[in-house]
Length: 450
Image 1 (cartoon, helix red, strand yellow):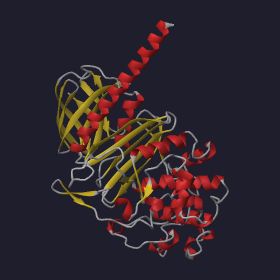
Image 2 (spheres, one colour):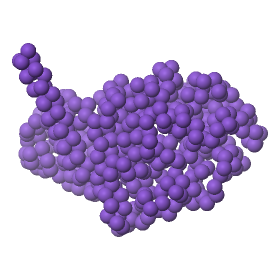
Image 3 (cartoon, rainbow, N blue to C red):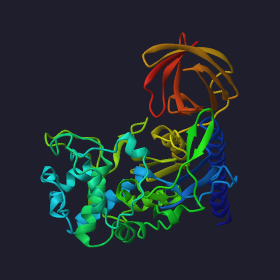
Image 4 (cartoon, rainbow, N blue to C red):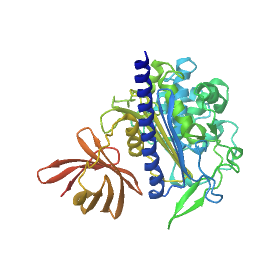
């Protein structure tokens, strides 16, 4: 019995120690990453099953006061709000409150004749033909407080559709604003109240709220990057017209909580989850690669992922889930244009998925000349490696800092930092030296080293 207890506690200690080492490696990666990518504040969370296994923050929440970013810092999550809206949509479908084949004008009677054939399926699947924001609309500030979502639809409903409903896939935030108005009118409840009751509360998302002037007053700062290497604060905005499409504040911890509860069928049942994650089709049967809201793909190992990014005034967020492994990761930054995409999320997730084997001298110390292509042009430069660290020089006019060299299946994987994001190089040895591929999330472009 004593021997069994000893083995049990020894295994617990080993797992705890390994977990701590992984967290330290991710901490080191991200603390260096925010400097290279010029991100003032970054918060990150990772969940496995129904447990948050990693949560940390880096940099500052407010550059003027020097107040540190924390795991409780709220960020604009932009279009990740659409995932909440899409989940609410399938929940109302399951309750037979609405039907995906119903027409939008059955619920929103103010729509013009051009919208008469648009179905709720098409709104949720981005195949309605409704346009997206223009650049000037993204930069402009709204000062109107809309009491109902329907009141804000005139911002786009007088515009011509881009194509016949169902003909093509075309990403549209305005389509999701209309979808939110449909659900509001169908239930007789405000969108925010409905979302809180049906999604946020079942997911224990206590930090996720619609952005209002009161919500961000004296609490949250967002920035635009200015050249050379300076930041300017973003002025407040009224998001009452776009809450379903991109108007919510959240934390990475709340976002992975949403993901884990979703995968555990605590918010919607298995059938509804399958509807969310199944690629939708255009009228001619062509798959779009996107479910209701969620973008669907595979990582560098071929594992299924679902994800979405969010870009807002002064903020960037990214959310990714591995449905089969039940791992979720969320990253939020308080600066517009922060390089948070699939590659960053997948690289970080790899530490927790056990993808990387850490060994000494995986790549012999020394200097190597590399040849690759960038934008179809040949590129030559140098890589210097010492002790599984190093630098990559003259990579598209940038020097990249190597933070880890690991074994990834049968490849040696170099993880490096650039101002454009976390870059990965998958390398193998051959008779003439080394060869492989590089990319942000997948090995896409050939490279040789000698």
